Length: 145
Image 1: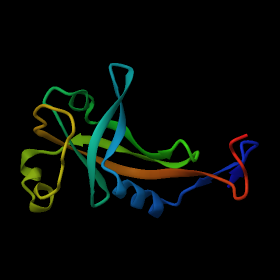
Image 2: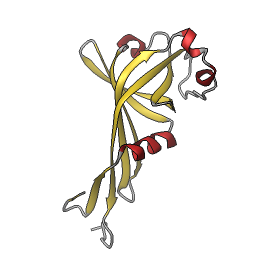
Image 3: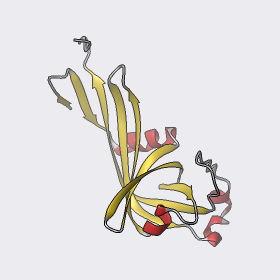
Image 4: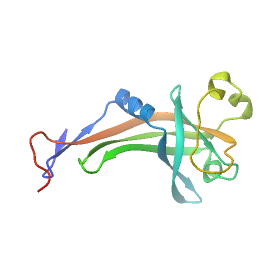
């Protein structure tokens, strides 16, 4: 655990905690590279058996990038209290075939998307690892100064 002059602590999270936090949320940002340019896109997702499942449009940057290495980042921040957590999940992003999507477990997943338009493609991020950090105030410190 690190502390700084800002009277806050920054603590690394164990993988099990990272997985639990990822499971609490369903909106994050995924980073991919297309044509030597980094793109960070908001995505709705769900977890299933060690992978992140998401939907996208037929002509999306995610489809253009895949297969590729990608990173999903999910956060929960309380700005007023100056605390929160951030989890990064890295892995291989790939399209799921129509045949694989017919798998009853996969077909039953709730893959609600916020963005308008058709999202016929299902993609997966096969995770190679997760890391995370928790930022919080140290006890007994007035951070309003």
